[in-house]
Image (tube, rainbow over all chains, first blue to last red):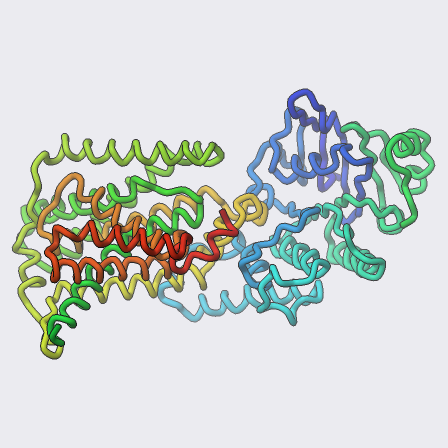
Length: 258
Length: 306
């Protein structure tokens, strides 16, 4: 069976720095895979290559068997890959609802004619996309805040909104960059529940996370990067006891049970 | 000042302001989305003027002088020409410079502006061209009585058209799929792209829309002033740009407000001192407003963006 996402020898260099070196990864449908590694290991660069922000210097990215290497972000998005950011990146001057509506762009009709005529069908479509957007907000628990300005939401809620917006692009693979960063223990637990519910919707999830407890409870597989190189890949139990992984972390930071 | 002169100043000012507003919107939309000043926008306006007059000539040769039909069709031709030039501008002179230092696209814009002026000067007309009176007479010679004052049909048309366009633009930006894509692109190009918005197409759309509005203003202005010159776009463009700055660049209602203030200032100046003082007073007003409110009248939101 074709994996949902496959990278073959993916590499990205900045000047002399090899940020990502020949990383191979397979993600099956409906799996949760975590990418861990010390700071500067190349995790975010890896995400940026996958989502089309960076053009890789070498290797290939296949989404559902289709080569997406070097495609523009909006094309990658259309093929079913969405992401969130470690530093939240909402449209602050839009309402919560608009932040979700904006992500439906590619799935809505483009013809200006029904717009001008305001036909029944057009209004029905408008209502449908609004209802869908509200559905995504409901899913992350923000429906009651739909009309608020997104910039005024509390930090934890902004992260949830980012996920709702990503969902509205109708992805099959969702990239979450430290979704629990800066959250208190209760918010973190809720985020873990939200991620499991995302998987229950049929999504595959690729996750960068520093909270080891989160990573160990939620992941089907873990990929460990160090200096841009994949040093381990497998089930959480296997990765946890891998001597190379332990060494990589001891040299920099010790995985804690926070 | 009698009630009659007051009403006439208001009407003249508002209809001049409405034409400036249509051009100012192009400056402010492009700035809002790209953070750059498209100095060639005035030339897009000028190309609309010339395209309209030449289309009128062609139409009357082809099927005779049906004033309203020809004028409407010529307006459409002007919009298409201006939009094509505006799109080509973006595609050729700005797109590749989007990530360069801010001075690069600005310099490119000044270059395009001068290029287009002298291109028209050398290939179309070295002398001023008169707008065919036959088409504007009906609009300029007929009046509506408004209390003690007279309003020409042309002024009514300008006002009506501008109001409809403003309404349409407001609806487009706030309530349509393209509008939301445009706002998202203005706020964060990369993020817009990541949620599936084709950013290049959205930016091209902004240029096409702004250019078509400038063409409408160009047609109105050529009927209003009766003369077309190759540097008309530079003069009107500068005024419209001033209006956009005055209102707070990047802010759409601001551009309209700024244009209205400019139009009224000009109408008042023309009456009190003569039209040769227009540039002195309008730019005087600009400097005064900027001293008191450096971001322009409605421009507070722009500061966080830039």
